[in-house]
Image (cartoon, helix red, strand yellow):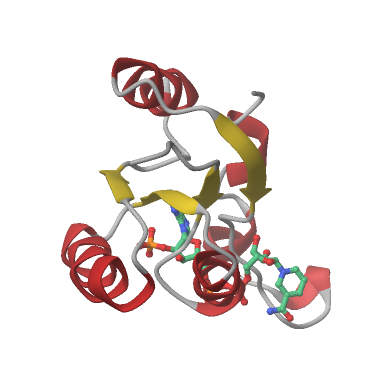
Length: 117
Ligand SMILES: NC(=O)c1ccc[n+]([C@@H]2O[C@H](COP(=O)([O-])OP(=O)(O)OC[C@H]3O[C@@H](n4cnc5c(N)ncnc54)[C@H](OP(=O)(O)O)[C@@H]3O)[C@@H](O)[C@H]2O)c1
């Protein structure tokens, strides 16, 4: 079987990242999905591989933690994945005027800053 190009998507278990995973799988990309929710990742892998005929590599990782980008890099390198597309999507949002938001909602680390690859 010819090796396909791989798309790395962070935050692929819901929302925009999940929809990107569907679109890229439909276009024939193998997927490398990194999010925290392991059972959701396993569910996507189980559904997408037979449905789209692509390989889905998954990694349960909290990208807000120091060193998490290295974990993603190492996981891909160990499996010889050649990442052709990066959807660096994992993150969160809070709605409302900044001054009105609870401190806990705005003091989380910005997920995207931990993935400088
Ligand atoms: N929707 C909007 O209107 C909008 C507007 C502007 C910007 N954005 C940005 O677009 C991105 C996606 O938004 P969305 O609405 O699709 O969000 P969403 O449905 O809440 O999905 C967020 C994704 O990020 C993952 N994630 C969150 N924190 C993570 C962490 N610490 N480590 C690893 N994965 C993490 C979640 O998976 P797990 O829970 O499995 O980890 C989930 O798959 C976010 O970065 C958001 O800030 C969205």
